[in-house]
Length: 506
Image (cartoon, rainbow, N blue to C red; front, side, top):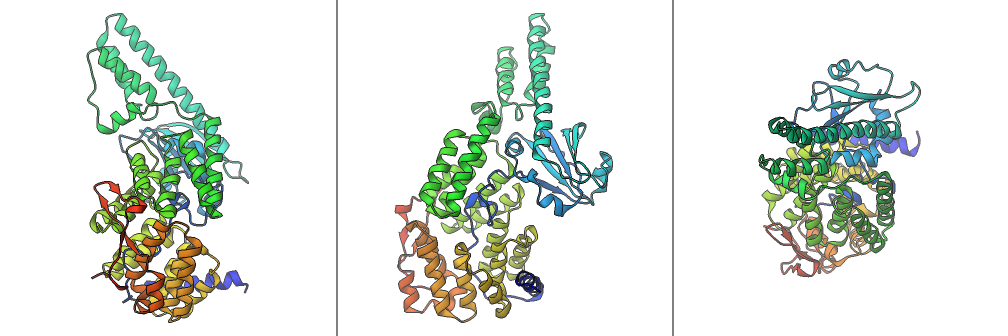
């Protein structure tokens, strides 16, 4: 058995232990839940920028009936293993459609009800685009020995959207003709039909609203409708999306290589190219939350995502980021509520991990373990998920299994905090201190983040064995508190120094 296979067996064994072992050691509201890199994939590659918000339709689930949905894109892969490696997860055009009220659903092989509705063959990848009522508008199929390509799907989507937009333009023109002919009532009905497609075609929707007002039939706008009209713009062209992709990929590459100032420049440039693009806002917001500690800026960017039409992944990252910062600011119930809203938008491993940390801090170990397992279920092969789970494996007394995972992943610089927690639970205080020092002074490059992570370590019961250590007190002497007022978070130079000695908050 090779090294990779042995480690896989070790981790599967660890999962079984975590399923049955009660934990009696608890972490506080920090705990190394991870972040950065757009908030989606810890083991990111430079090309992991645009992520399609595929929502799983497993057996028993039906098509969504939310009236706010503009269009359905339904993917029917032959197998989930094949789907996991598909380029359909990384399409810029499909990601952008998520911000235009398009539902992207992955129908699992076991959901025979939906598959029968569309007569999907069992041995062929198929993607169907349907109207909001489920009526099929078009489909593409893969060759039997191949998978669907992103280009196939994007071409179909562009064709169908182009046809629908042309139909709506014609309907708008007919409405004007009907009004000129004296049939204002019919004109108003046609314009309302155009308005109903406002999320998918915002500029057309804005024109329809203006025309209805001129005809004496003004619409009652919701807050989200008003935002849509205020920001109505033509979606980025293929060339515009490519430029945005290149800026984000350059930023992610720099972030992965810890060239943070360069990463910030690229992410800021991406936002300048597309000021309301949720993916660009997501990367820059998460970068400031996790890497620079500029929570004032991160909060502004996350709230922009929530205040504009955004894809589910961007909303989930924004809600999680706001939740984590809110918890750090001492408003625990508000932060927890934001975590729950994040999961409602889209399930992310980082949200489940930080929910696990939260409930451990509340001494509800069973609930915390459940969230930890949900993070693992989303991606059990993810290195960060495995290291995170090993922390609690060590806390439950199964140190040998935890240390195997820690030793195998000691090179993962961003996980230094969690690796330190494993060694602290194993009783090796010197190794724990070494890794905490690596976290604070090698991985971290900004004082604000360093100060708040020191505060986490001072309160984290995973490091209880270090709290009375003079060396630990010296290592964490720059620990500071965050704060917030309303939706506004503190700037890095407004952090509050800690005056209490190391030890858990009472």
